[in-house]
Amino acid sequence: MFRKTMLLTLAASVLFSSFPQTAVSAELSAEEGAVIFEAGADYPVAPAGKGGQRVVVRALVRPSRKVRVRAPLAVALVLDKSGSMASDGKMENAKKGALEALKMLDSRDVAAVVVYDDGASVLVRARTVGRGADDPAFFRPVQRLRPGGSTALYHGTVTGASELQPFIDEGYIPRIVLLSDGIANVGPSSTEDLAALGRNLSRQDITITTIGLGLDYNEDLMTALAAESGGNAYFARHGGMLPEIFARDLEDAVTVTARKVRVTLRCPEGVRPVRVIGRQGKAEGNSLEAAIDNLYGGEKYALFEVELPEGQDGTVLKAAELEVEYADAATGTMVRKNADFSVSFSGDTGAVEKNRRPDILSQAELARNAEIREEAVRLADEGKAREAAQLLDERTKQLQAAAPAAGAAAPKLEQEAGYFGELAESLLESGIFSSSQRKAVLNDAYTQKNQQAPVSGDEEGEEDH
Image (cartoon, rainbow, N blue to C red; front, side):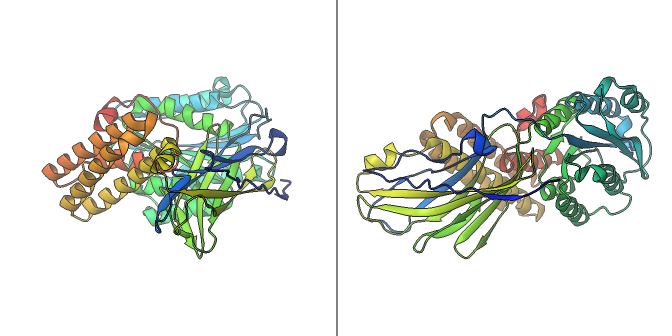
């Protein structure tokens, strides 16, 4: 694949006559790039005369409006056909899901179907999709699938990757969609083993989406595999959700705009970078870095918390320099864009509140909720149910206090507050998360952190959540 590095630098530092605009936009024209990059903060106007104030800086990326020819996809559907798939219509719905996924592809794309039980085998070799789900080369082998055997999940994933590798250097975007309803019990099977596999395949540009079906799969393993490769992760409470999930994931795949998306925030002297909120990130010196990975048809963002020095009334401070780097999905070109973010200080409390960004405030609260979910599960797993319940109860109160300032997102924060309260009460009563609760809590956390599009059809999950 033809690759080159292109540096596009934007000076988006705004000079304010009094107060900054509610967002600082670093935007290239559609002809200059596939991605629009915008920077803003929850409080672009900070109180004067107060040191140590913290603000949340948002780096937002979204596709440009330019009509683009998408890159071809190379997709491996890796299906569990172990004995447990015989129950509750799982196998039949898995077949439907696979065929729904194929419907999202066209003659530009190639697809393979891999199945695993005691071992792994290629049901359909990687080939041009053609008629997709209606093509007998796909339809007939998928329909003939019968469950039986154990769960060689690792080998299934590796076999799927092997089918994709010949196409990676030919300009195809590779993606594995992995379905499992049980515990991996053949071959490497620990969370660490699968996380390492995800990292290795990510270095080969392969994204892995994982779909956990029912209540018997290992959610830690499946989430780690998706996270390390920049993929989506789904919890299918029942088989009836599979067709929508497969279609939803391939809808993402065909709209991919940018890959390997990384955002770096650098602070000048006097401004302290605190942390990345709700995403995998790293801190080094005066900088923070967050991985967004794949950008599909909608927007995604990274949130950074920074601490400001004391500022005098009417002054403007360059608080951060942000850089986004990504690979254009259609061309493979590596692109960088830069934006400066400035904050102004005011002694007028009304001006501070008037310029508040409810959208960024609410996004930061939801990102923190993802962190709270993961921490509550960790505490409960360690036998600290009371501490986990206390954490959830405290979060309930924080969300109730934050909701009035959240604008249109207030109902969502109130809903989350109610959910955390119910979860805390349940945890105090039982002393442990049920399998269903644990899976739902962790999947909700991952979905929020990854800004993954939701799927419908999980009525029981809606009640739990």
